[in-house]
Length: 186
Length: 283
Image 1 (cartoon, chains in turn yellow, brown):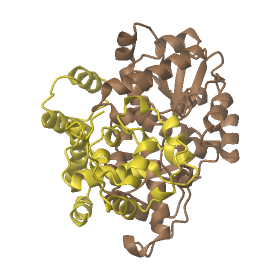
Image 2 (cartoon, one colour):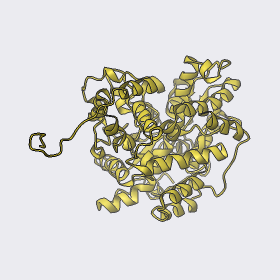
Image 3 (cartoon, one colour):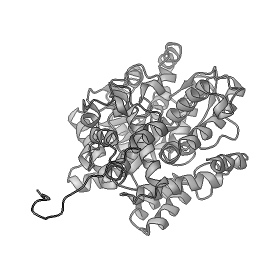
Image 4 (tube, chains in turn blue, purple):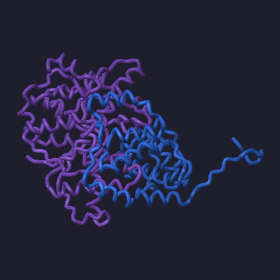
């Protein structure tokens, strides 16, 4: 343990007193109600792969540890299975708080711990914006280009094509413009 | 009976056999499905990951189309179902914010299991079973989004759903008990963190095998395509053979109801279900 007296580096925690309020306001979720029962973490199927446990995320928000939360892998590894939300005794939609944290990390330009997850969702939404529906083959291709990992799932994609599970051409909708307008408003 | 139908993107692509088997089952039960005109993608997980408002607007357009029709709405994809239910509640709660003042939302929104499980429909299924799937042992796998969170899905028993168990029993499938009905398979991380998905999905196969199941039965296209397509790499990683087909509940219903040409669906599976069905005298 470092100590100031010995002249070594002292880890300094700099809480952001606005962060807690910002998360509650943006999410509309009562994060302040969390009393650390840990049901969220106990039921989380991906806790084994997380660097910060879901109950710790709630506590860190309360404490204003903005960087620690927004730079965590946890907020991107969360698969949105909604188990935590279902079981929270204080009715905090924890999975929705995770959505809010992902959005904040992008808005604030924080370095994202799992960049591929962002690239995937961007590829998905890009396909949706273009066609009004998701064109699976095009979406996966776009994601593969974005990650420069062109071949890891190529065999699987070929097997899907053979089985007629991927279409070669996108099926656009007439309401494409309406859909694009929704993106422009956001 | 007539019902509006929102297939969603998966059922027009990866999960075509789910779409086709739903249509076959409904035809044989004389339920008329009317696909929503010019529906758009609901945004699935990606929209709410990135932008809450976009997620609601995308679903709101589909709900407005369904609302004009006025019929109940069947949404077979668990992710679409959850997004549409979520938006339905938002529009009713704050119509002005979403420019949805005209939205009535009187239609019920059903997922596949709760649609077929209703007593009058279950009766129809029971009366029309031509070939019970006797001898086939399976576990019901509901996954996440048709159930959770219950304040959105209105699922009566989100931790221990039984609708698909009952459907399976009605068509003669032997339902094996297991504790993983609603555990996440990780499908949303398939492309981004495949190692984590193999862990979650592999644990499901091991538990299903331990329960004495010969197949998994699901009503989520994301779960089905994930579990089916990843099974070989999970087997290679763990050094075990599961050889466990992953069926859509509607494929098995179609088989039991004697619908035409279920073989066109079996060819789409990664784990070929034909040897299992043949061994039970069901092909």
